[in-house]
Structure formats: C-alpha cells, structure tokens
Image (tube, rainbow, N blue to C red):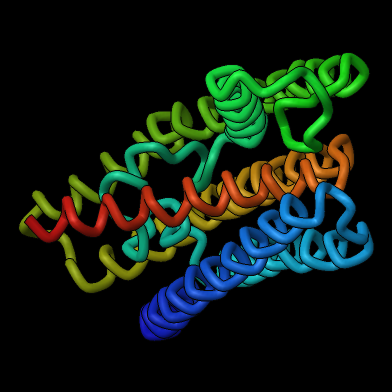
Length: 262
C-alpha cells in the first residue's frame, strides 16, 4: 500500500508540473485575445473568446478530476502536498483555495481596471472590461458570494468535527492499548502489534474516507464557484477574470519557489 501511495504521489507531482505549464500557456492565449479585442475596438468575435474560456475552465476541471482520482489512492497526500511551496501551503483551505477567493479576484481586478481608467482620465464609456460590471452583475456576484460563504462554513464545520474526532473515545482508547502493549514486557509484542495495527488501520480508514468526502465537497464548491463567476460575466470580462486568476496562481507559486530556495 505504501508503494502504491508513493507511486501516486510522484505521479500527481508530475501532473501538477505539467498542469502549471499548461496554465501558463492558457494565460498567454487569454492575454493575446484580450489585446486583440482592444486593438479591434472591442469588436472581437465572442465565439473565439468563448473557445478560450471553455479551454481554460476545462483545464481547472481536469485538475480537480485528477486530484479526485488521486485522493482515492492517497487522500492524506492531498492535505500535505509536497508539490506546493510553503507559501502556497500556508494559504490552503481544505487542501486548496477558498472558493470565495475567485470572487475576491473578480472584485480586485474590477477595481484595478476601473481605477486605471479614472487615472488615465478616460471618458465614461463601456470598454468591456471588469470595470464595466453592471448593477445586475454586481447583484448576482453578491448573491453568489453569500451562497458560497454559507457553503464554505458548512464544510469548515464538518472539517472541524473530523479534526476533533482525532481525540474521540475510540482513538484515545486505541492509543492507550497500543501504549500498554509497548510498555508491557511480558506481552507477545508480535501478536499484540499485529492485532493493534489492524485496529489502527480500520479506525484510520474511516477518517480517510471522511477526508476524501470533505475534499470532494470543497473541490466541487471551488469548481462550482469558478463556473458561476464565468457565467455571470460577458466573454471578454471572463477572459480578464481568468487572466487575473491564472496570474495570481502562477506568481504565488513562483514566489513560493524562490522563498523555499533561500
């Protein structure tokens, strides 16, 4: 079992490196599309933008699908991912980004683009970017944020209960039994150890199953939130949002790599 988990661990690490490279390639395509849109006076064909958006979103879906498959083999590694830097690890919530992070990225990029326009004294007219969010869009985003926060709290509470169960009666009782076997010199260590290891494996298996369920819930909410944000936006706005999300993801990884190397 350990060999299987280690093999998967290395395989997912390799997948993650490939995934980041593909994310960077998607970013370049999105940036190019945004530049072309501006150069063509905001008249770029939406169909080409939608193709890039679908491609970018599918890339995130592939990540969570592969992650879910990996968790079936070794869910523990997903909660202590060595493929991430210590900086990224410090920002994790249930083995990944908080779903509401997507909404914060949207708000931040919207403010940045609006401020840039005001700073350049650009007349008030639609440019198509995130600085042009309509009142209807803002209301939808606000509702999405409230909904996502509620669901985050539910998952957080479930995680808290699981963490507390590390000291529940079965765990404390079993830890005492194992300790007694180790202390008792007259006990047949081989028999006692084998029996207790079986009990430990049985008990921890239920914890792993709960972890896998929570991971699935968290990743589903992350993907659901990303899709919902994209659906609220116009194609060009979705492009700007995905650019901001990819840039943040990639740069945090870069900064973390540099920090870990020092």
